[in-house]
Each structure stands twice: as structure tokens, then as C-alpha cells.
Length: 66
Image 1 (tube, one colour):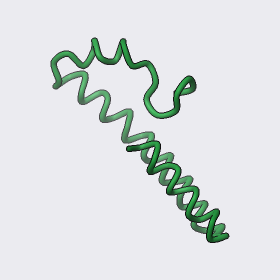
Image 2 (cartoon, one colour):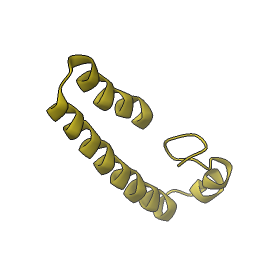
Image 3 (cartoon, rainbow, N blue to C red):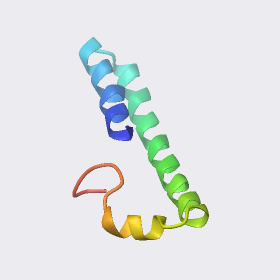
Image 4 (cartoon, rainbow, N blue to C red):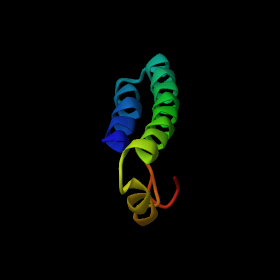
């Protein structure tokens, strides 16, 4: 879901040729990354079994990178 949203936030401004839209999209992706980190902390504290899941699934957003 987050990866698809990232593609949309960058792809639409590129398709439309909007520099301001691209800047807003990149800022939005940064803010979404901060949200992912916060969500992961909450899941570790509140969801039983999430730590084992986290060991299986190593990447948060971009495979083999992050």
C-alpha cells in the first residue's frame, strides 16, 4: 500500500510536468516514512507476535533496501 502510494505521489506530478507537485510528493514520502517507523514501534508494543513477523519480513517499504 505504501509503495503504491509512493509511486502515485511521484508519478502523477512527473506525468503532469509539475515541479511543485513533485516537491510535495517527495515531502509526503518522507513524512510517510516517519509514519511507518512510528507505526512499527506501536505494533511491536501492542501486537502479539509482531516481533516474530518482523524477523521474517526484513524490509519495510523498498525490497532489499529499506
